[in-house]
Length: 282
Ligand code: HXC
Ligand code: NAP
Image (cartoon, rainbow, N blue to C red):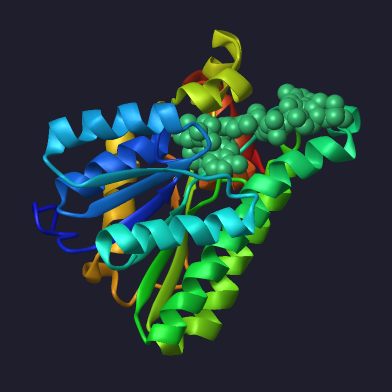
């Protein structure tokens, strides 16, 4: 499936495509034949990254300055992308803001800061592009990068958890409403993937990082290529019947931590022998 023409001719807009997972996905999409627009606030970074991506992949990359919190800027970005490439076939809602904090220490402005990027930004981009696709009778694909806690919630990242839950609901709601226009919408729920942006805000010490690794049944963090390939598949025509779904890529973390009895992993073989004897006695 991962041949050089998997995404051939597709124009993909990746918000936050200049760093972290957005950059890894953009690189992979280019390797697989897509033309890619990377859009975020730091234009200088985007231009530098675009030059590196062009040199590494030979693909076409358009860097555009965008603050997803501004709906008019979203519209202008789509205008510029369409002017350069003729159309936009796929949107990856990847831009995000996040930090760890006890919730009672947060102001309403702290909530707004995260909700503005993650929830409102995703709504603005999805709505504007969806309207254009529907008006032109053009099919399209939207993929939103959520988080492993989007469905069940998590303390200490509550603004992000609330926003990501809304994002997943947006994807599912519109999959039902816009399927008839040939528009597919899905979300990915990643577990921990090391990036400068996430690690500096969420895993600020090696001790915190080690705690996270210990909660992943596979015993490690994710590799960017693993997530980038999943995203490429979901954008591709191979996933033509996949819509309204949330796909976990977390090394079993969500399933493992939900399993009531999984805490028995701490029981040693000798303790199991003693427990077995007790159980047999009834
Ligand atoms: C508590 C904080 C805070 C923090 C900001 N605030 N950082 N409160 N702890 N660490 C509060 C401020 O005090 C202020 O409230 C309000 O939030 C707005 O702050 P600004 O600095 O003005 O916000 P802004 O410039 O809009 O920046 C947004 C940001 C920033 C989210 C705070 O970090 C950012 O731009 N991040 C983008 C990249 C990013 O976050 N990447 C990580 C994604 S990783 P007051 O009341 O003081 O005015 C991810 C992974 C999930 O999502 C899962 C991993 C396993
Ligand atoms: P990152 O490098 O910090 O990515 C966040 C990106 O969002 C940056 O490129 C940033 O670029 C952009 N951005 C922030 N505010 C923006 C705005 N207002 N307008 C436009 N762009 C904006 O962190 P990451 O780890 O790669 O995160 C990428 C995605 O994966 C996010 O959705 C995150 O929630 C999700 N995720 C990550 C992990 C993980 O472990 N890394 C786990 C679960 C989910 P600018 O600063 O240039 O704007």
